[in-house]
Length: 282
Length: 215
Image (tube, rainbow over all chains, first blue to last red; front, side):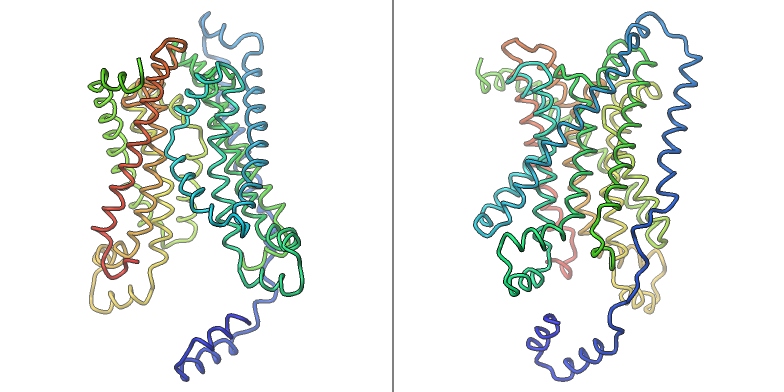
């Protein structure tokens, strides 16, 4: 309603105004029952897992007949593969947790009126940070903090914070101002507006941020091996330096499978956790 | 040795690395742009084909770069081939997505008008649709380039060219006096290159975006 009023006030041509009004009143009042978007199609449910099963099965079959020399066997023996996989998952989960608890509150803070002036500065900083190569950042942290998991984790977190932060800021800024005005108009406190209007509206965006962070972190975690942080990157780098293709392929295939699985799970979460009210008109 | 002394001593090597880094990224970007825009042009008019192209390229982007390079090495060997293939594949998504969005966003009445004055399909595409879709495509190219700068550094591990070698040399000699200098010069070099490329794209936008639609 408010947009139409504003249009009317701004329009000076009477004919235009009449046309506008005719257009708007001729329209049916918002499509009543848009098909529910919550349903996850069977394709979405089965395609990625099926692909992953085929890929892993093919790798396993190839491995069953591959002849491993002592060096490869050494690199894969004693549950080292499952250990690397488990380390990788840990790195991903821990770093994602920290990314979210740092980036999302920071994004909310930077969009409050008191800090709004700092937003462009933060965004410029974020864009500059995007040009920093992940491996360079990680290497600098390893030199600074010493080899080990801590440096790797901090590197992974630092690398993912900026994209999630800029996503959060962009999303909170994209909220329809008239909705916020309406919320303030009915007497909500700033905290109430944030909790009951802004954040629920920004949920899809925050979920997208979670997905971004997860996928980025699975990728950056492969670099943890260069800082002694373990993970599936260990298999890949061992394979490359020792020129043992089975080790290299196994490490790469597991990493790809993990990345695709994580992305798929996050995309399901995006659909399932979206507030119901936002489904129409998507 | 301080950082600047190091840079002064090794400027020859650093410049070569920087040049190779920039040229690898640039060539892969040209390839990715050609393939990406072509994919966009072929798929944008059909809903499912466009979605398929976007999904396929975004799946590629989900694959961690070290794993992608790891999968390419058994097939094409070490060095330049895996670097070029990986960089080109990673560069595709932003360009494909933005070409599809840009081409779909062209006002149908303009295309209709072009048809009305007798332009052929190819002419319409070349003279009307692509110029109008160029600003988002250029944005896609910018995003891709930034990303490739970092991925190219990782490709150095598979004996690829560029400043990544400097970083890995530093990592290999951790604890030595030059480790920090090496890593720092590689990292800062890549940041500088990325900013230079970005500035070049702004200039390119000024020169190539038709005056009528410039904001």
